[in-house]
Image 1 (cartoon, helix red, strand yellow):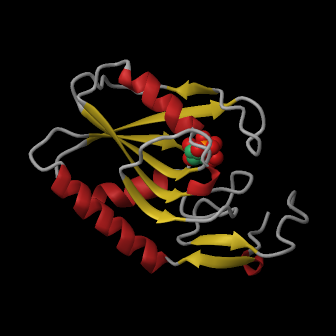
Image 2: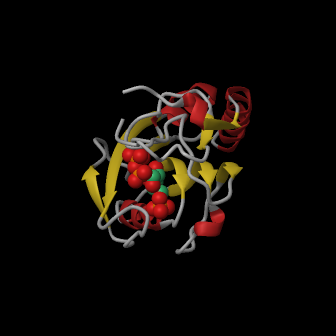
Length: 184
Ligand code: PRP
């Protein structure tokens, strides 16, 4: 398997990502000053964003992970989400910040907010690196957005194509022809 980098076009550079993530980290640090905080990252796409973001957050915080899966195929979201991996710690009475790499239809986040709210946190807020706002099917409030992007397929910085390309340090859009020979 080889990465077809020549068939990708850089969309958000490594430098632009780092600068924006640093800004988000600074803003979150100001907003949570003196408060307890737990970051809840939604696997797997958010791990790269999380690992950078948490190093720009200067207030003490803990980190936990959840994994979800949607029924049906991913291009036509059924809106039905299930938990594949749950948190390992209690969020009761804590300030939760959900960390997402991308929000698309909003179904994943809508579901997560509902089930996490049932556990009695003090508050839940949301940070996402990317927001495909025009694709939204359910209304959700997003507190911190890195970049609003149009409805284009993107890879890199945690985002995958068939589980690969997550390790690219920038975000790319496929050029024409990229999807041919995708089983390489
Ligand atoms: C992505 C993303 C969100 C979800 C957003 O995860 O990380 O969790 O899709 O889509 P929605 O707003 O339409 O619900 P994905 O299912 O691609 O899994 P991954 O993070 O493991 O790649």
